[in-house]
Amino acid sequence: MSAVEYRAILRYRLMIPLFPVDEPCPVCRKACLDSFGEHAIHCKELPGFKYRHDWVRDVLCDVLKRAGISAKKEAPVNFLTDPLEGRSTLCPADILVFGWEGGKHACVDLTGVSPLVGLKDKGFVVGQAVLKAEASKVAKHDKACRENQHVFVPFAFDTFGGLAPDAVRLLNRVQKVVNSNSSSLKVSNFVFSRIGFSIQKGVAAQLVARLPAIAL
Image (cartoon, rainbow, N blue to C red):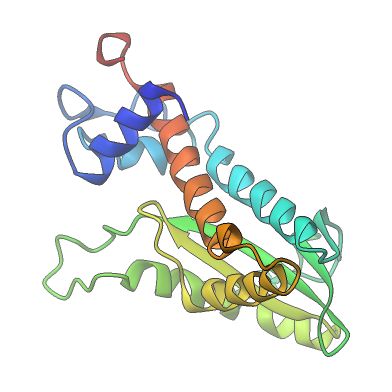
């Protein structure tokens, strides 16, 4: 991570303004490009929107392979469905982990959200956004996976590095595999450290790409 990226992610995490003033997003023109950078890393119409998702996916796949777990990213499965459309979306699994549970392959689906969703609401609860994202993914894909003899594993994370329960369970299991293959204390937190860093690296890169030159 470069010095510029480090400063950007530090300011984002401490909620120190990154942009000079609130102004309309120049791309989608539907929301405010807020001074704290929230819209800048969540606008689906901004170039590079999937960068953070794809970066974390690539790192997770690398972690699995380093642990000796057979996995493939962007694996075609042809049965993931959209309940609203009632048909296959022909969407590949972000990561397909072979023989993950009871001999069944696991479709791992990554999704990143802002931890500040609902902050202005009276009922705001810390960590609620990532839990809702996990539940939404389960409702969308779990049934189709089970019907096709696969396991569905949602991997929801927020831009502050928070992880949903299913993501934590997956990483804990991978960490146990890593620990069983090495007695070095240096790898005791290898899995969570790499994923946590990849999330922050992805967010930082998106912020820096949109910061005005004067802020760099």
